Amino acid sequence: MLTYLIQRLLQGVVVVFIVSVLTFAVMQAAPGSPRDLMVGQAYVTQEQLDAIDRKWGFDQPWYVQYFTWVGNLGSGDLGTSVVRTGEPVSSMILNAASFTLRLNVASFVISLAIAIPVGVIAALRRYTWFDYGSMIGSTIGITIPNYWIGLMAIVIFSVKLGWLPPYGADSWRSYILPVIILSIEEVAALARLTRGATIEVLSQDYVTTARAKGLAERAVTVRHVVRNALLPVITVIGYRIAFILSGTIVVETVFAWPGLGRLFYDSIVRLDYQVVQAIVLVLTTLIVLVNILTDLTYAVIDPRVRFR
Image (cartoon, rainbow, N blue to C red; front, top):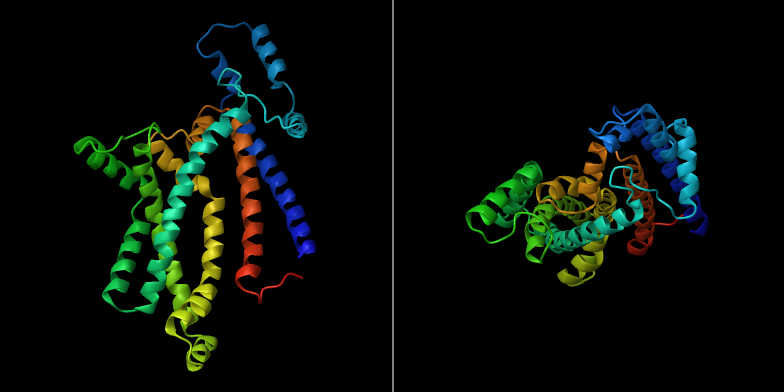
């Protein structure tokens, strides 16, 4: 297993390097310039523009700027925002990540607590009203865009009823709507997957054998059915955690949530190169680590899985 882990880590380093180069190149090719955003409508001379380029390294070729940035990473320096008055990128990401982490941990815990039991029960009681109702609900949850649900929730619970705040993260009440909106899609996807995986496991010979040996139905379900049905579910759970930004960028924008998703979107619009590159680097590293952790979890749940 140690050899496998080292190989995966080395592969991860290559992936992070390739993604960082592509991100840097795309940002360089994007129309506009952060220098123009820094200057704004102010009148400046060409000498002043050249001075700005020299200070921020904009006068250097993109590959020189890239390796300068990589060299700074070795000392833990993620750079400085060129748009937000020289604010350190690391502090911006740490502040935004804390909000995103709290939001996603809450929604994911709720999603797992609901989706896995619902999926297992729907499979065990196939073709009953519970099965039909849960699958219809999951189909609706996957089909309807979360931004539309978020806007409707704001109209109903914030504007009409005045029960919950429509934006911000000032109190625990501000978490309710974003967490629910994020959880809807997660519950729908995981419940359907859990149901399908459980139905497949129920038809396996070792389940029939366990029942023939006289094991209680509850023991068969917990020890043999659920444990093996969780393998494909774990794959999706790792995927959903790794791509945490894709689910939160819309929700954070709708609810004006000060997290990584909103920071990432604002930085792209404002051509804040340093912030975009740092966020992509952090998220890519997270994807690699979560994928490795997912593979290692296989061996814990299913002893038949071995790494060579």
